[in-house]
Image (cartoon, rainbow, N blue to C red; front, side, top):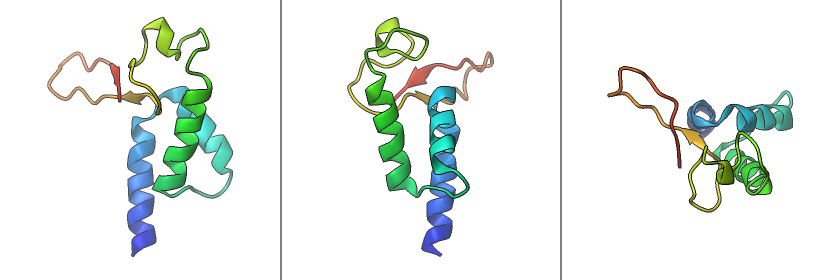
Length: 89
């Protein structure tokens, strides 16, 4: 039962990852899947290694949150009819 819960939590986390981070996680997983702890470790390592690189997902470009560490997550803006893809932690 615990594995089922871990799988559901991991799937929910993946729904919130940026596109670049999700591609990295999926390619790292291969044919298996990561539990929540490993998934967050891999996504944090990915984002932290790119934290100061210029580009679309860089925190210095204004795209993401200025908070240190962690993967950028798309916020689910339920109340906004335009359904914007704002990024937050």
